[in-house]
Length: 156
Image (cartoon, rainbow, N blue to C red; front, side):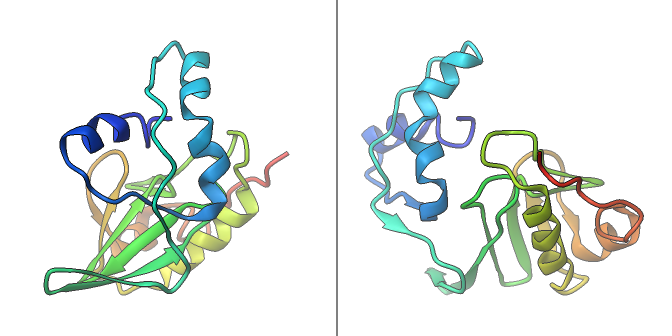
């Protein structure tokens, strides 16, 4: 719900496209209902107009990126990477990783996703969904979930 709560309001002012990996459509469609469980009122956005796929190429002006399907925090989580950066959302934070105790989360899938992120170049700047930016190299050296000192617990 915290990922999609502002979409309806933004789209009223700016008719921008919304993209989503199909694996997250059930969560997307439940955003308003799930918000109520946390005491938050969220306007349910209309369904996305386009689907992300693993390996999909994206361009923004002269910049080029690739979509990496990155399940774990959610089944349809994606990472957008290229141009020396990776927008990783809630799968990786500076010094930690995203939650896997939420409905449809999968700890084993997140561990595999982290291995894919760790394979990006050390100088790749990582922009998480929360907290400060970091780099793949810094996280590989200091984040216990990327340097092998800890593993994401399998979901129950």
